[in-house]
Length: 442
Ligand SMILES: Cc1ncc(COP(=O)(O)O)c(C=O)c1O
Image (cartoon, rainbow, N blue to C red; front, side):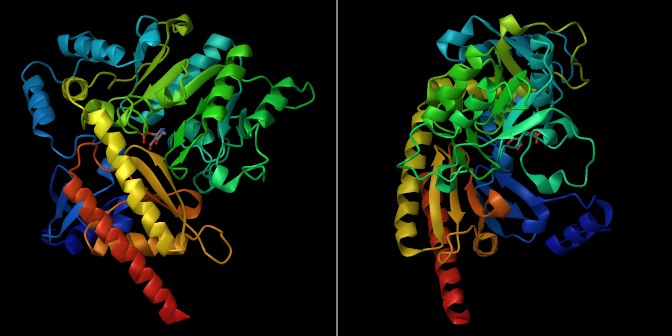
């Protein structure tokens, strides 16, 4: 079949590709080319990209510096299983260099299959082998991947309901989602935070829950609706896990690599995790995934976690360039200031549009929770309408959170202020249109 238009490509895709596709359901386009923060479809429409390949494209599409490094690497070696290569050594050195000082000399790296989910799987396996314990604690709203073991750690029920026999021994605890407190406390009465619920469980000999091998945490939940945990929650969790010899896994697959204005998001909380999962942006647009862990945990036996694609030489080359760029520029400070600017503009919008319930996030990982102003309940229908209108006007972003009620912004970290302003104008226009449509219906 010869395809010319978006419609042709989507027809072909629906006919031939699995029904499990997601993004083309929201954005029925075929991408002709993509550069920086701009996408162009085969019909010639142009979009500002606030999706960034799900947070992969930290420096935008086809960044010349990263592409050149990957192309050059092709001349030397493109695939090497887990053999050492000069670029792999450099990649590992850079990854250690990017860590907080306290971690640099006591961390090891385990390369995994090139998806975040495999890194999460490896982290959980390592924690179980190290502690000789079986159970894991995860949090309401957490997202850790789509394989059977990572779905077991994921809050979103709709993806799990059709699957019997997921990983046993996973217990979910409330996350500090203060806008909708999971234990119904008001911010003024909540001085101990929902973390005390977890602490009580660990202390209670009748809790019914075994002491776990590990706790897995996103310090800022992405798919769960861009929810930064409170400082107290994270710091208490670190204290509790340390005191109880429980491995703390911090999932940085989405929040890492500069996204929140620090290299890793946990750095905003002044804690040191035992294991970090890393993927998405670290490969400079190419797939790679790994865990970084305290070397005291290194109880792996040879072959304990293998995978044919454990070393993507192109990702190593592009990743090294990415880290060099971050280290030699003010990119991280810019991520923070751009995030602050966007939030400030969104707060102004909130004053004018009562369907905006909450604005939150860190750096260039931001969310707007859409509500029904009358009930304050989440309103996924309005969120979807805003996504559709913005798409028609040239802006692409993802929805997340409860029932898809949160507008999620994941622009590239080096996006220009000009494009940010254009995107915010499109957002404002979309909200205006919704309010206008609402009035017409009433
Ligand atoms: C926090 C987090 N963990 C794990 C994953 C899974 O990564 P992958 O889709 O590459 O398997 C994701 C993906 O969005 C994620 O956001």
